[in-house]
Image (cartoon, rainbow, N blue to C red):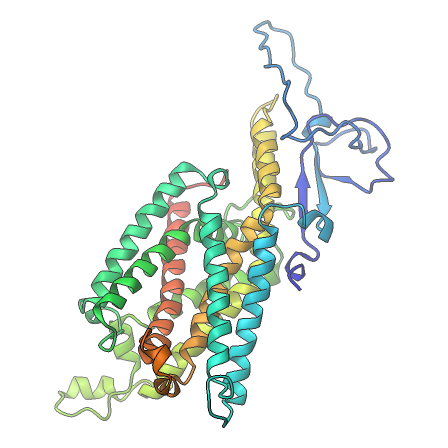
Length: 435
């Protein structure tokens, strides 16, 4: 099942020296090439990996007026369909595989508990409450540690991106201190009255780590949305995606933003029906007659969190394909920049996007899975844990399962929406650009 998200996707290779052998046996074709009078495609007999290139000589620039002849063979890019053999050789494939398996088991246990309920037996194992929590926490731990591991990978991101990740981590920690200290309820509709001071600090630290870890994945999500919906107006079918995938990307973004706003107090107060409150003016009574009941609004919030997590997983395939197509865009831009283009940068970009494929999958996969796991834990009947003195003596069971888990699911959606929206705004203003 972990390979399901890769079925039908295409990756690209950009070799340096392409021979003129027969490529019919290998089945490799050039995805895009410059117009040429010859229809025969070159093979890959002279392919040399970027990582194995050691004795390369610097190019000598000739300042004479002699015309340069551009070698079309070295500018061609090749498209390959992903299979299991390619994926198992990529970095972080084991981390992705383990995260998928453990999170699938945890979410399945939480779903079984939600729809079939607890058993009537007594004891920790006989009662059905405790096992979903155990598997849910194991899945959370596996996915969180995998996300942390890829966030500290040195060569997978730019230095500026790591610096911004650290800044967002500090900002997330400060916002967590504000929310947990009682300042937040005036803006965010969360209350942690039953959470003690030490656990509030732990919650703020966890918020900071998640905000920092999600900066780079959310930035990639914004670039995938920018390319997939063809905001560049390049009209290249090999770079943008089809109409159905575009609808998924648009729905995913809009639902994520709307879900993040449901816990903002001005909006949440408008959407809640306040008929039961007395002592209000005429205007307040008129507004109070419109909206959901408190119970229905809580259900709407949970449903939106669930749909946001599921839709982000559905959008994983288009996002991943756009991540691979981003390297094709870099190749295309440099191919048409000059009469004699320098394709070293695009060749390196194609190699790195292919090399860190599973890392990108983890970055797209981990946030929605964390949302679903936290949301599932928030639906556990935590009152039944009070009789387990050993467990509840160490953890604030009812507060963590009900309040903190739901808040963390919303926090991931909120950070994801803020970073994605800010990145799209910067792309629109020309401050950031895809290259």
